[in-house]
Image (cartoon, rainbow, N blue to C red):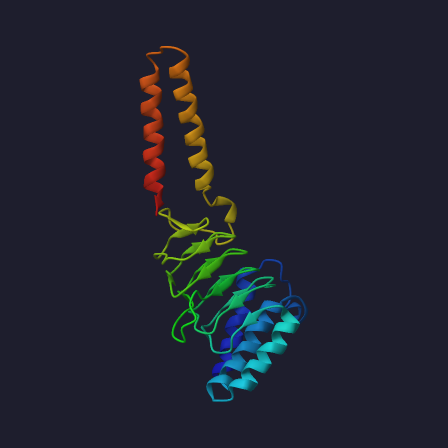
Length: 233
């Protein structure tokens, strides 16, 4: 009965997070991420019952059908939605809590050959953007967001956004709409804009004696201070 209840929550998660779905019938043909999770739930029970080879075999077949690689030993909670899903990898000791949204190309991988815990823990309510890599025994806090193509190798606090390579934590909280990836700040762009303006100021000083240069320099200092406050390294 618990298996059926979990699958129902997975179905609800698809409907809640994907406005493109118009019928539950579409789940059978257009959502490999949903089927990968269903296959995992069956394989996980078999794997934990001691039939590890059978569990691995089920997920091996599932990988060929869905192009999503989930180890049957991973711990995955309720209401997980893998949108589009192709290329998603979830390692053996990964722990995913509830109501997590994962996009294509995401890797929850390890950075160690040790047999112990070596994959990430993803808390409830997290959104992981396409192509993001979360590596090692780290924790992504509740209701946080990982930007597309980011590489996260350190813990991310609750209600935060991590972006970049390696990912930096932005203290701006999570966007209200979990799909609003266009609202993620571009911290590299902000830094380059600051550097370009700084170089322009220095060139201006060398070219001529201008008393206004001090005011411009102070203005840039204020911009840089704001940038540093927005980024937590």
